Amino acid sequence: MANDSLLDRSRTIAGPGYNRWLVPPAALAIHLAIGQAYAFSVFNKPLGSLISGDVNNPAPDDWTPTQIGITFSIAIVLLGLSAAVFGKWLERVGPRKAMLASALCFGGGFLIASLGIHLHNIWLLYFGYGFVGGIGLGIGYISPVSTLIKWFPDRKGVATGMAIMGFGGGAMIGSPLANNLMNHFKDSAPQGVAPTFIVMGLIYLLFMQFGVWTIRVPADDWKPAGYVPSTEHNDMITTANVSADNAIKTPQFWLLWVVLLTNVTAGIGVLETASPLVQETFSDGAMGAGRGVTAAAAAGFVGLLSLFNLLGRFFWSSASDKLGRKVTYAIYFGLGILLYALVPTLGHGLQLTLFVVVACVIISMYGGGFATIPAYLSDMFGKYQVGAIHGRLLTAWSTAGVLGPLIVHTLHEHAQEQGLKGAAAYQNVFYTMAGVLVIGLLANLAVRPVKEEYYEKGPVTIEAGGH
Amino acid sequence: MSTPANPSSATPPAQEPAAVGGSAILAWLYVGIPLAWGVSQTFIKALALFK
Image 1 (cartoon, rainbow over the protein chains, first blue to last red):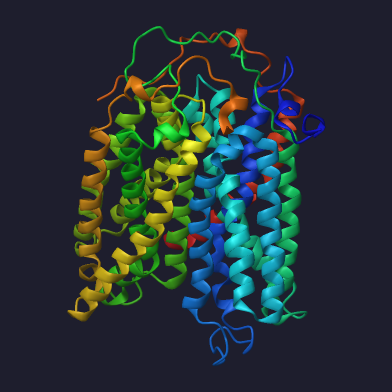
Image 2: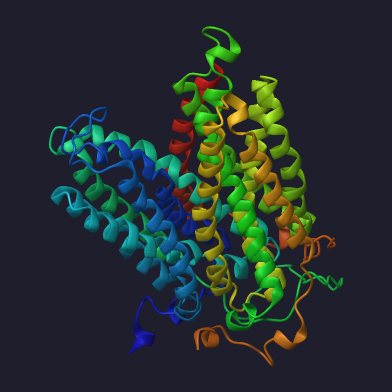
């Protein structure tokens, strides 16, 4: 019987006295693992020199950077698609089964990919890391979100911020871990990549088990001790529930889709250009001999942005509990427009310190946008199927993952063809991204409470969520 | 613009169940140690920017 399964939702309902502060670490165990995806670029050069054995001198039959880059693109597209497709299933079966599926897909994806690397078959790499692993990413990303919102109705932003912060932190662990492992295995396999994939797959599969077996859902009538829902009326926080199927019929869903799309697209504009931007803008030629930004310093700049991406997820999402979601996004967009428009000026003026500070604030709001959206959705649609609604909204992320780099590369190449260099070669990228944020600002300002016709009639049960 | 979103009234800390017990501390260490390692590695790399 399904009810006998330890994975079944009914077996994960917390008993009296369960400490809800165990839930965020369970969520983090999933997000810290799958966040590795953002460190995939650490494999680019080793994967591109499996035959030649020399990262600086690839053989004609070695995989090209474009071929390798497709792996990450597939993974991100599958993240959005699987989050959208499996969201309702997750609501029905509960977080434990979903987390286990995520761990099996993500860890298994590494193992399949390692075979592809060993056989030098890129299709197997695409299938393993991109397709199977990407499904693990999508299911894993949304798996703890609705559970956290139910455990922390009084601190929704804090709770989801903690989990989604883990996705930012995952890359910080995945990158040095991969480098250390490839160095360790470099004599036993080409560039040490295939065994690194095996070990990382197993490590992540095991690491994620902590989340699988620690996660609990609250009983339907559970509330935090001393928690009294506010009786103060707030149009922007519904007490009703909207199903995932109804949510996508509302303008609010699509306005928030645009909000996420624009915030992520603009953020990618900075992340994609960070290293070349800082090196070309603050080169020796511009700053004076020996005073320009080196490749190592540029890598440090990228690292600093990663830190602020992580911190922003927690800071802004937590702040949104006090400020309100709509105000928080208005800050992302309003302040973002000013800062994006300021970046070229700081570049022309060779204001390196201010430039770094501005970039860090921009990236903190990029991360904050990811972390605040689940609470925004919960405010608008209720907690009934918020995980499934969040999953469907993540298609905006996949779209931004294609749109952002396309805008950046098209504008930058056009500027280079016109002979522009340094900050000038990037200024249209930043002005365009400021324009993208204007669209996001307008979409956010247009968000109004959901009409009653979309509400679920009568009481809702979680078990009914997937039917 | 919306009004502030905090839906709860003030929650006296004494009324919360033990917010951090032994198992919660271990759970946070399980995820906190690798995260701290990753952050430290990134921070060390970021220091190059200020040299």
